[in-house]
Amino acid sequence: MQVSGDLITEQTNFGIIPVIGARRRERLDEAIAAIARPLDAAALASKTLAKAPDNDTLLALYSLYKQASVGDVAGERPGALDLVNRAKFDAWSQRRGMTREAAMTEYVALVAKLKAAEGA
Image (cartoon, rainbow, N blue to C red; front, side, top):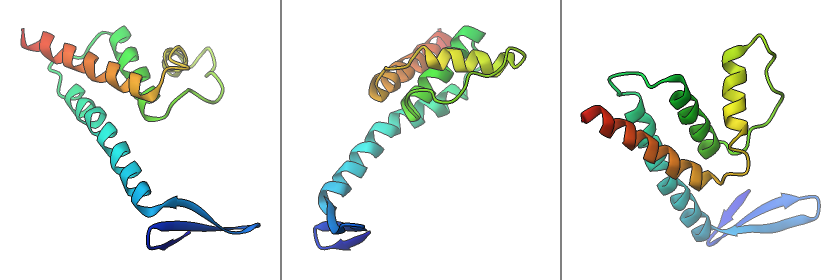
């Protein structure tokens, strides 16, 4: 990949092709970083809860975070003897199709609710 002024190009089997304008790429990177900031802040806040949430809430937090950061679950479902990872996989797979933005919004709201309940 080469940057030349406002254009990023890439060498392919078909020759050099334009990929994306450099300024557009910078704006795209900034937008992605802006979306990720609230998720990261909520993830840090979730680790400072005074009392660990119940298992259902932990699974909700896990599945929302994974959906927001990675997207839809992939791979095989863990075996029946691997109870913890199977529960995580199942919780995450129930979020399949949810947009990353919606998952992030729901995750941030859930952490805020837990923090508020802790303060009450």
